[in-house]
Image 1 (cartoon, rainbow, N blue to C red):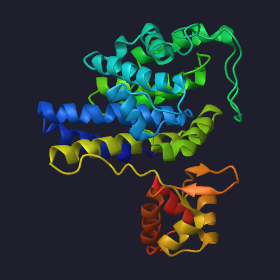
Image 2 (image 1 turned 45 degrees about the vertical axis):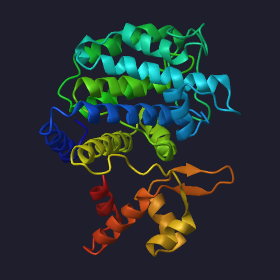
Image 3 (image 1 turned 120 degrees about the vertical axis):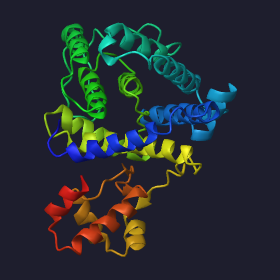
Length: 330
């Protein structure tokens, strides 16, 4: 287990126990949650990779089978393919992660690229690969088969990891091998969520507004840096999904706000009563996360950072240093 995360994983375990206490859930509630997660996971996972379908358009394509004007055939297929792959992943929930094989990962990838790139769908790459703008050096294609065999062996015996850490590590290992020409991220997120389903946890939704932080955290881990930032994102995603389920079983609004509006630094500073320079300094020190950077170079923050600043204010009242505050924010 990554140092310092024991209490964080314990909180997830407690939330899961709370949710388990309500089981079995009514069939109608399960169907409602499944329908919502299918659209949300498809929308967010594809959006991270650059698909321009909105959440509503994704729902029309996935649920109604409708075509959306002005969108490419590939974008429509990315939506329907992901929904199909997600359905297959959900059907594997009664299996154990130790039974996962390379063929399962290849099958997910085949479903993801079906009709988009049939030549490479479900096949390991035999050419070099690079991630645009990244410092990560990807494995030589000649090593892909042996690395995937190593991943298969690790899945069978992952050691004493918390279920969420196990699923997150599987995702990280797969994207680091980068075994496919395209579709690595979507396949890795589906693998992670398949493992979470098998271990009776809900799926992790990486929100569009967390895209930059997610990609940056992955890169930091892939070049040998600490995994803390990456795990924080996955833990937050699973925790949010647990909260959605808990609200649903309690008869509360089961869905988070679907507003992905991002705040410029001035808007965030004004909302929390701080100066722009303070927000910049706290961002530089790692207390605040940037959600996106515009083409003009502006840093944008998610609405979550408003609550983060409130926590920072509360911790500052205890006369903690910024380094100490950062430790509490993990």
